[in-house]
Image 1 (spheres, rainbow, N blue to C red):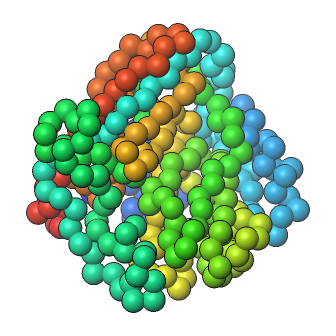
Image 2 (image 1 turned 30 degrees about the vertical axis):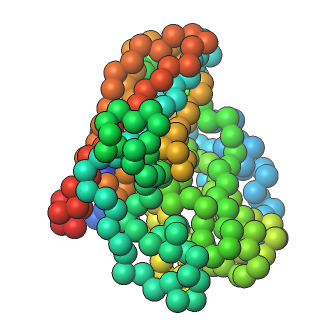
Length: 306
């Protein structure tokens, strides 16, 4: 339930004047903000979505989202796009408290996959260089978002976000993207994969052939999705579709960086889908400055198991 609160707070801040959509599941209803009134003028679309409409129209395994539908979510009040000075935010997400517990997944067909999914979450070793506390470990796959701006919207500039299959695992366990972006599943392994977004949408199951063109997937609503594989039950990736592009997930060093951040007082927040608690910090972003923001999550195994 932890992410439900986190997502509702973040998504609702960008869709405050909406009516409730007809969500597919109970969890989706908690995560997804409401849709704007049908009587409003068509909002401004993002540049990436406008390109996707034409780019994907001839691609069999892509169901592109209409530009107007995306804009209705990401810019319901038809606000102007931000074109002022920007800064950047980077840092490290750390975890303290209980270590990651082992998972009951079966890795007999691919033992090396246990290095990715063998524990509830991926963390570095302690002590680590630069750790705020001796027991702190760098946390991989954490979600970081920047919120708090008003009076404009920040458009997404990239059409897609890649996720790569290598060996018998996805390289990432958490993917953040902007609603309207395409998720390209690229298979560098020697085996066939069948990536599926859950909850299921109109998307039919497509095979990701080795070294072939990527399978293209579109989350049909903002919120929390799961990227799974039909044959590998352990391979579950948390996919978060936000209403703005100021987000990132951490790498193996717990590091993240978010560029193109509007100047002014903003808030940096972080969470992990399998670690308890959230953390946040307020910051005054300056033009052409890279601000360092490190945050610490404390894991409590007993709370995670509930």
